[in-house]
Length: 58
Image 1 (cartoon, one colour):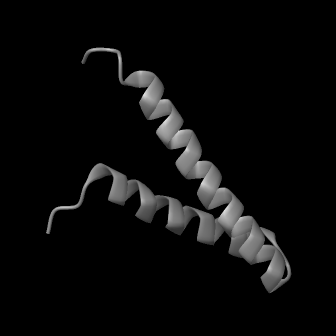
Image 2: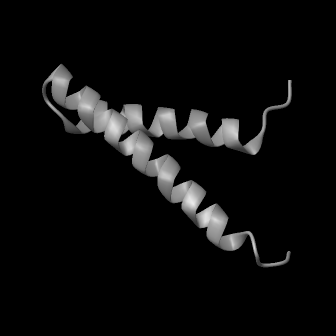
């Protein structure tokens, strides 16, 4: 099974945000909000950096 770069990014962002949320917050509500926040920020920053690097040749 071959997955795209974007799908690998989504899976990685989900795993990292889950670990960050579970290890840094106390209540389930705080964990959920922080996990979603980190996941979204991870995707936005990654896509933004990819968009900025797109015009440069290899």
